[in-house]
Length: 369
Image (tube, rainbow, N blue to C red):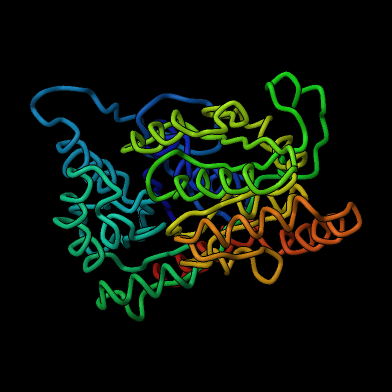
């Protein structure tokens, strides 16, 4: 079987879809299954020497070259290579293929449809224009949680009977990793609350800032708040709230954090707080548990599927309830924290990229056969 993957997220992203695409390809590369793998990507690289890699650069031209590449050049290459099936990890395609080539689309979440206010206008427009057509024409849809599948079937009933929810995995680097010197180098003093993720409205960091203000005013605990993540779209309200925060000097925004630093942050934090309004999966929850971090998160979307009965939940719109949980962890003794940490470590073992990749291959083999 000749399997093509539109691997653009390797070259044009560094957040969730990039993590997903790289993790799946890493697992494919370990397999000795007799299948041929072809990567379509934007930049030359030697990261997958056993895969055929076809570079179609995304040239910034005023004539709409990106659309030409997406709708014509990529389909031309896929037809020429006589692939049997093509996977689109970024859910925008694949387009213009003959029926003999099976199409598999990965849907990570439906935020542009469910919560358009959290996205740029052109992203909203593109999703509304094309996603329905993409899902109608695709042969199979892979989602990363049952919640995403439920959303998918609600908004696009055409996907019923042709989708699979496959829970994701975590990288091997996410394990308990103590390094107090590195924590000091990052300008952090322990203990600290930690929040991880791109800073954008959907991540609901305004509620976190409000809860932290209550915490600082009503308790004597001295615990820093550390926010790790790059600035995303529509982050102005967060920046304004942050700059006016009465305890601004106790809040540190690290920006984008290098891969090697994340496990250290998770391992040293008092608790990981993930107050997101909606997630297709929620990588930080799994990563945190795998490093032994206790987890507080909102009780919506797919987050309970990841956190199970190990995470501690609150309504996403309630800074008071979040404060109560922050206070609970600030008051925990070491024995209680150790018990919660061990339960998280055990739950994290249930999530595997190897299993996820094997499930995808099973789908592809059924489609092509």
